[in-house]
Length: 114
Length: 113
Image 1 (cartoon, each protein chain N blue to C red):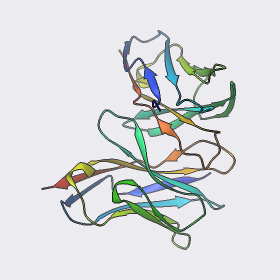
Image 2 (tube, chains in turn orange, brown):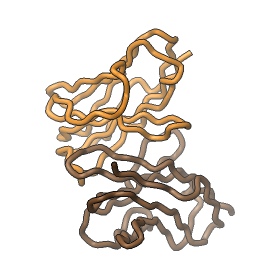
Image 3 (cartoon, helix red, strand yellow):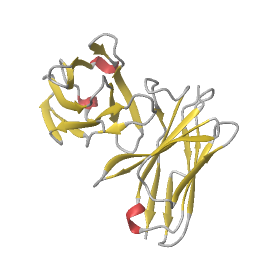
Image 4 (tube, one colour):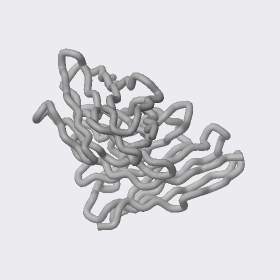
């Protein structure tokens, strides 16, 4: 089976712009989660989607949003980019999104905000 | 709120030596605990997980971890380090009822030849 894929792998934007990141989960996986990784804050949970519905949300401002499509593919959007949004954004998928399910991570999208 | 603390942001061992990476959790209910590894420029890969079955959990690449409720610990060990083990290791907890991992700050493991 193909793993979790994320596109693009690298992105450079300027402050004030918006960005959309894409994630394709492992075939058959219905839950997709997003995480932000920075040197200062480490790995932080953004949100989780299951069957096109956001089930869990982390402590991030409303500029961060996401959605999930009927084929389980997911996108996350960051509007009005700030310098502090520079990070590695990781997507993870799991079968049913239960707390004991293994989350399989993609390689990430590295976003640089100038 | 559940949390994990990884003691030591950097650990250095010699090739062939014991690897011990420490993780302590904070949880009012039995937690679900995970260890992930991240190689440079890659995502995270699951090493092992504890989901309230056996307290000694064996994972991939010769790693294992023991859940000790009395010590609120879930330390990761490997009897003999290999150069390919050099990476960053993350301990994480998953709250009951939610698929959201809460990660520790990570431990960078260096293997000396």
